[in-house]
Image (cartoon, rainbow, N blue to C red; front, side, top):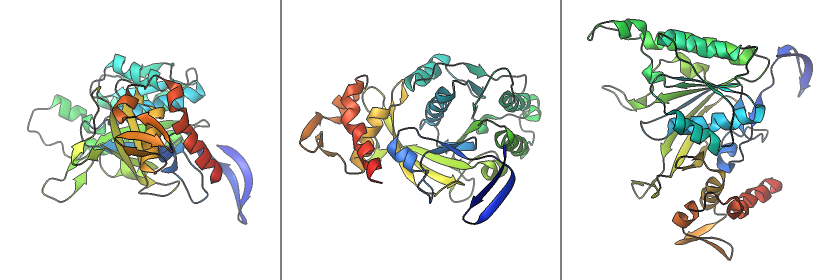
Length: 320
């Protein structure tokens, strides 16, 4: 928070105001999905971001990748409250893949209530900086009464109450801390019982408290998930809520198996989606041929190979 006197369009603001900062990932459709009416790109940081989707689509991998990108720019650490079960080697591989080499604090207490409290407390740590926190996942929260009670006991609404309290505390932490504190809340999506449409667990307060809500799914082509022989796949995402810009903007992320978000392969896919590159068995930019998508995926470790695709977006941004 900073004390300021500033004027925008003839309106004067005084008092303590925390400017909203944005993080540019370099992922074209992703950064553009968060644009506002002033043309500002990039995902807002220092906010609560709910990232949700169906089981097994890659929600955690997306969150790990984004958290690593953000934390790497501040030389900060990551606080992770994983209420399910995570593989440290897999997490390290994803973070390394996006250029992160800091510390990860695995938040784990005797019960989920204390674990969530400790995740918030880490944001206020004066000795170790935790600019990014991850809660994985909302649907896995088990209240003490449920954990210690008997099967069949009624515990409806208790998770929602915990999440309501946690969301308000997290909102205060991200809003009041002088430095940016970004919280990723990973959540599941499932059909409503006896109703139409889908729902996410954890009640409504977490929906209100989140400045950004992102729905992700694996990309389908011809009614089949597009997956490559090495296990790589493409994420199709949609910004459902954006307090700092437009909603319903879509994006694509190429998830390289074992590495998370791959900027070069994402640039290839973005170029295809936007018509800057073409494909007819092989992928081309103008008269230059780069091979099939499968062969391009095999070149993931060759950074120079992807320069022409990344330069496409640099020239496009120069036009805007």
